Length: 175
Image 1 (cartoon, helix red, strand yellow):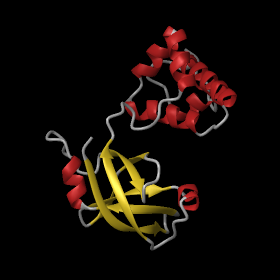
Image 2 (cartoon, one colour; image 1 turned 90 degrees about the vertical axis):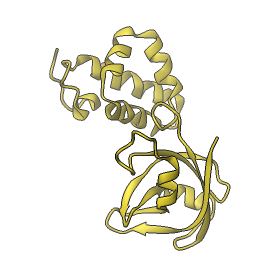
Image 3 (cartoon, one colour; image 1 turned 180 degrees about the vertical axis):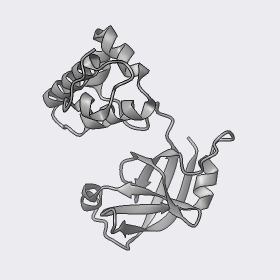
């Protein structure tokens, strides 16, 4: 796979309370697709100082640069600190959703045709939201419970009214 390597510093966006690494214009152009209008609408695999890769979405930082957020947990695990110079390796993320797909969700969708149909009919961003919400739970049993809850809620919602609150079970307009 095609990589882009460079060095940058761990920085912090105070207003968003997050750590990040800057993505230079050269990297954005390197991974840009021919038909892609928005330079920042890219999902990449990222590794810092040889860490395990993770999925990240590029966000505009200004001055024709972007950034990818870095979790505090990753900084601690790799003993990285604010303003530290790091080596970054970016790789194109060719996965369908730009993140790991939970096994629990995959199995549930194989067994429930209605849930699969409703899930696939959602816009990509809402599907990512469901995937992300499931991935926040580490225990396989809890992931399965969350998968069941979210997809049951989704099936209860009228088509075209699949809002985040309803998927989470905070409001239930019935079919």
